[in-house]
Length: 121
Image (cartoon, rainbow, N blue to C red; front, side, top):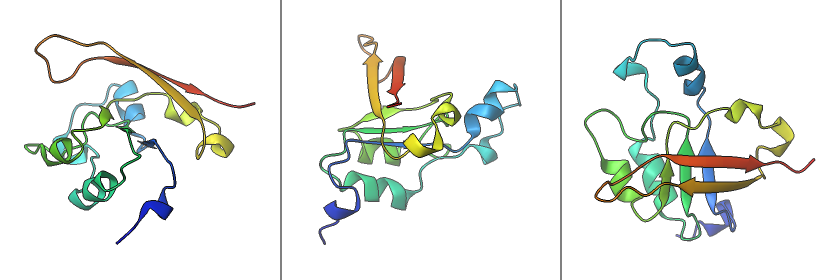
């Protein structure tokens, strides 16, 4: 089934769960409350060939003890622990430019990234 019409030409999907606010107020880490992508969600996103970036404000895209979503989306840049997504105005949330500056660490499978949202005013 061709689903490309659902996210036509979209190169990035950013998910705001509100979890960044949990971390900001220094709530204790509770593994049962960490939002993540469901298996269906990661399979769905993996089907889009134009999609290059998947990001969210949670600390991981996988439930505890799993790496399935990381494996399904391994050919995309995965951004975790994004902050200040609530500061993107509601009218711009479905269309803003984003720039990322990942810091590569030799031998690591991931690393820190600076991510910037550019909003048209």
